Image: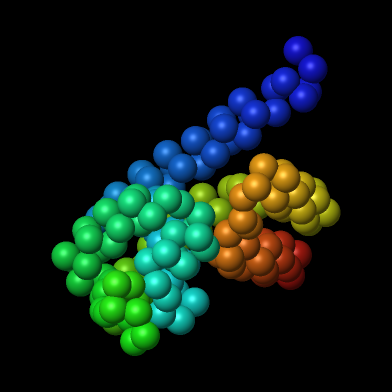
Length: 164
């Protein structure tokens, strides 16, 4: 089978494996991998509307709303009426949400390390660029998550190994 035909399944397989591994890690902290992505998006410090949040993740608004309801019940996010649009809700992390995100981020480090360590720095940069191009070509938006954080982590890990 030509690579062009195998690519969609290979992308899905890699995503599902990463998602399941992440879900298993985050379950120990009472959140899902998808909720982690939501917390990560909000962790950038700026409150945003639910619609903006859905676009930045990217996810559909009804899924984001359902996650927000659950996370609000846990005290991890706060939803307030938007300052200029009474129909919109502004979302932000609570102090507990920030702490939960930091704990989950640390817990997920092994999964991120394994992902990043499977690639050279050049391969990781190339893969990121290619995935962004694929997302854009399919009409999607590249998520604003801190993808560079993973590469910074790899560099720190690689540098610390070299110095040993």
